[in-house]
Image 1 (cartoon, rainbow, N blue to C red):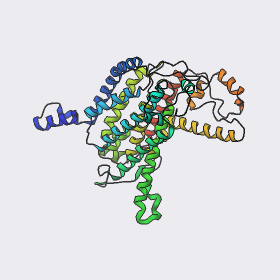
Image 2 (cartoon, rainbow, N blue to C red):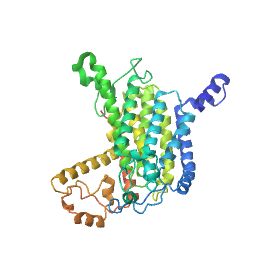
Image 3 (cartoon, rainbow, N blue to C red):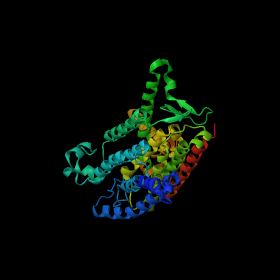
Image 4 (cartoon, helix red, strand yellow):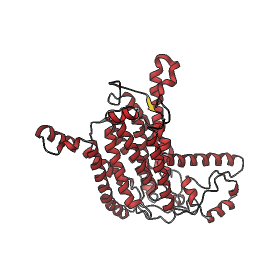
Length: 440
């Protein structure tokens, strides 16, 4: 909004200083500062409101979650703070006709709403019977007793959450395929491309359509279909990885802020013709608006840390974590850097893989009458705070701790220390991802 106002004042009235608002650096810094201010200011009001409305963390069963039983009464749905603080600066300083800005706004709202439904269902366990029929249908509590709902924390059924993520990923892929505004510039021409940046190799690009040369005239169409499927997978994977990482005070917000800064740099390089030529990467016209959006989102996350660091005054909940993961995944797909995500989102990847491995190994063991485990506890950050009491309980339940491959992970760590160390790992991974632009 302000972008168009200042451009008008500059073009028509030649107002001194109005032209500076056309620069990406100015708008990105302004968006970050405003998001930081909104996040800290609105956050305080939101926390007090949620306490008055009694939308707070419910007590968890100590047998299933011994680490969070002391966090009863802390407001949840704090992702609303992040989303509001990020969207307002984007609406003020962003170019709202830009296809990429619109995609990021839609991603944030869609996954934020999906996460909000999940958080709302978790917070309304005592009022479950008075919920609208559609929410009871979507709830994982469907068919359970009131006693079970008192000691467990369940929200939206996983299948509906995955469906929501799938729809978004599919939509993003189709927009990038079909929209005439989503193009790259190559050889002075604006073209649609199924290329993506391939790290660590000299040619630096991988063409998805190249996998389907045997299809002849259908090669390009097959390449785009494959690209859409990759985009869908990326959005679902990163969104769930972010969700799993949200288990300690400040963990997800801090890691995500670092990842967004790294992606913001990559988006800026991709949107600047000289930098794109220097790093030999695709020049993507219009992607500079991603820098404004990511700066605002990073500012909102840093502001949220004011309240979310240990001991947390508010939890982001799925409202925030799903939206954060979606933003990271969609950004990487837009700038054709999705193959860098395993490095940028190394922590998210480790969290997701630990859960997948643990779940499948435990399932195979159960079929054979064994209690097999890969880690002491998952997501993997929980292994670092395993207690002697929990080890005794695991042994009493028939789990042979000595046979767990990763039982050497040092437990009894304070969650603040774990969080800081995960931030450091993310910072190193993000720096390496930027370095890959010249490492080939």
